[in-house]
Image 1: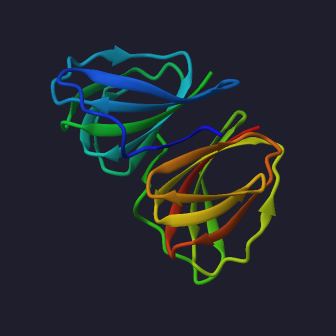
Image 2 (image 1 turned 60 degrees about the vertical axis):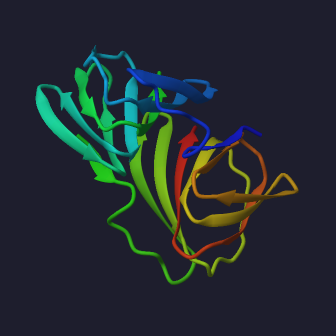
Length: 101
Length: 101
């Protein structure tokens, strides 16, 4: 059985983000992401659908040209090919990302 | 954009569980489940893979004959056809379930 805890067992990187795969099964990948406040905003435009939830913290995203603020618990669906940028996050922002290929 | 908040906008049922679909896309369904302490344990054995995270609360499951306690943040992967029963949960236990068909 693949078990673990979302809220424990990680440390916040000093810079950038860390990615950890919690599950990879068929066309599904579930990741935990921890962001530091020192991010270099990077534009993503993925071939896969992504559903993302901010489990803890605050984040500012730009999605398809629109600025969006996310707070603890907020989730968002990003269909494949939606351009999105993480502009800023609080230090230790914790994400759950579900990718469907 | 399909957005929402995991931790708000629901009430705990007096009995049983409530299920809410947050996303249904291709072979993926993401659900939020809220459990009351008054559950009639029901055995599940699904044709689909399920990844489940307890976002808040405590739960006792029986998975493939083995008793498992879950606490806030614990997640678990249940491959298709794994028999599992929710034996007990704290009142207002909050789950995120990802089903892959």
